[in-house]
Amino acid sequence: MRTQKHAGPVTRPASIVRGPLMYALETWSGPRLDQGRGTIGTHAQTSGIYVFLIAFACIYYLSNAPLLLGHYDLGWHLAAGDLIRQRGSVPYQDPWAFTLGDKQWYNLSWLWDVTASVLVQRTGFGGLTLFVVACGAVIVAYLTSAGLSGGASAPAVCIAVFSTCVLYPTFATPPNIYLAAAPNTATMVFSVIFYTQCLKKARRFLLPAMMMLWANLHGGFVLGFFIIGLFGGIALLRRDWENFRILGFTGAGCLVAILVNPLGLHIYDGVTATLGNFVQANITEWASYSQNMTLPGCIPGIVYILIFVALELRYAGSSPLPLETRLLTWLFLVLGFHQFRYMAFFFLFSTVPFALHIDRLLPGKPNPGEVQKSLLIAGIIGLCLLPLTFMHVRPALGLTDELLSEQDAHYLEANFSHARILNHWNVGGPLIFRTHGTVPIFVDGRAATAYPDSLLHDYFKLVKWDIDEAAWDSVIEKYKIDAVFWPKVHDVLRHFLVDERGWKEQYVGSHESLYVKP
Image 1 (tube, one colour):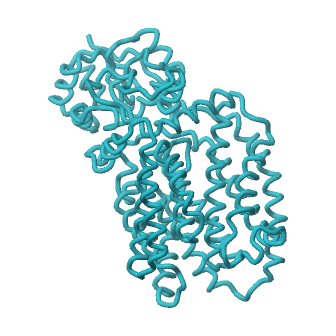
Image 2 (cartoon, rainbow, N blue to C red):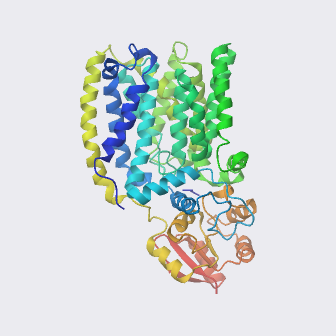
Image 3 (cartoon, rainbow, N blue to C red):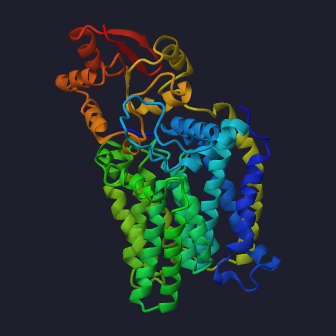
């Protein structure tokens, strides 16, 4: 099972890319390149690689823009943002489902929801898409800075960063995409920022302020503590007391910062409702890498992993790579095979070691000035292509109709308003967005952060191709179900409800069929 208007002027893509780019040039130059840090000469020496990588990575992301909006949970996130803005507060309980009981809704992404709601209302889905692409640009800039600071040459950094930024979003496995119009994008951005700042030992005093944002954007903020803890642990083993002290104060500041949220201490309840919950076994992004692999889409990632492992084994003893980077990379590679969502972090954390290994393989030492000049010229061409790419994809931007079309929603609103409908998990989010509660739902992708465990246990007994008749009869009776809204390809369910239980297949939509109780 998978959980998942008018745009700004066509010059918006270039301006969004320029923001992270110029910020990178002004503040992210690494220690190996900072003779005269902050000077115009330093910026000129490093600008080409930033312009090139950001421009062409953003072209790649924009060309996949419909996938950026394809996350199945986007509907309820937008509806939640609308609701919070209308009420002026974060709801204690979900107003859209009839199966909640007394369960509190732990909305760990309320700030992302509000941001997305404002963007869609004022700029349409085009503005939301550009916001996601800008997040991707920030990741590109930080990884580039980390690679250059680590001592890798510009060509090696280009190869490593571009490979990483093509692979980590995993566009081949929708809706499990890790650069998308979803709160997990915030975790991708902040994890790279925390990693880079700890690696470069720079501006770590800013991390608690960033943690305050992160904790209100996505529950993945716990990864920030893991990164700080790993760097702190290595500092302790090395008896690097100054670094250990700074990381300790940084971690303590982050602990205090996460309490600045509407849930207060109960934010931990929201995190534990996801991490380690039995629901993970039924959600594909938490499944193993092998279960998410699709041919031929998985081939580039597998090739990258094999090359990385081969280079690591070949140069492990002679590489100047920091131990923290190597540990993070290998740890998330192992975790990625166990649970697919962690593989994106492997690609991100492997960028610096991959660039250093590639540097050993490149023939000769090209003139840095000439390389930067060539990259700058190519990058400027890429920046000019960004508006054209956006104009090309703009007509396709919007909430996907793959699961629930507007026609489906209108039919349900007109004929089943306030009915008790047992809906499939994947269609819950779009149904919330299109009906805003006029058609109450049974379940959706918020899982244990909004629904009782008992309800989820009951639901997951139903999501099998072969019908458990006792389970279906029990759920229909227990929750007094009036209709079932389920994927129309499930012929076994159609036979069970229509032929054996006398239900009527009253409506066949774009993806779902509606079965009505006699």
